[in-house]
Image (cartoon, rainbow, N blue to C red; front, side, top):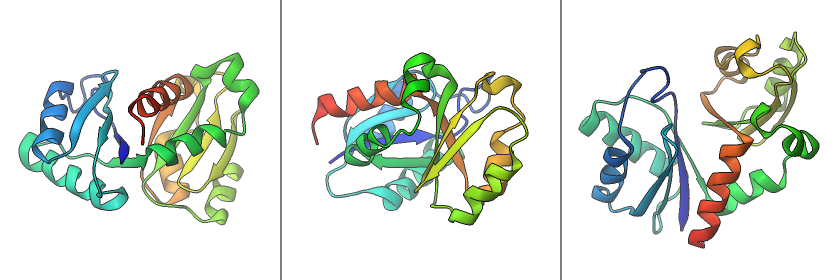
Length: 182
């Protein structure tokens, strides 16, 4: 099965630097086949055989810490789950108009509906939010850098960790996963 793995908060402004070649080598050593990386921010696509989801996340996190001294969260989605994230995008017009300002936050665990409601209530700017399953779709009309809807606030309200990718990156990874088949 084709899997997509996202590493949280690496290679951002010098924080937790890691070479993509090292990540690909690590995945290969773990028996994950043909790992490919996209961009320099911890986006990986690979074939995992029968391993999926949380067990893959734990394995990769453990080995990142052990072999590369890198402590970070890893979020894994199957190619089918990734395709569903794309298909279920509630902000198609915004994605077409300005894909860099539409972000999907991939979450470690599924928040409750009440948690998504609490996050919506915490919005103080022009952002628009839709939460579904282990994803939050957020439109940042003024950009993420100016927003008061920060990763820390999102994680606090949803009571889970997450990592964000803009729609351009989501679509690059969708294309890469689709080109590999499932």
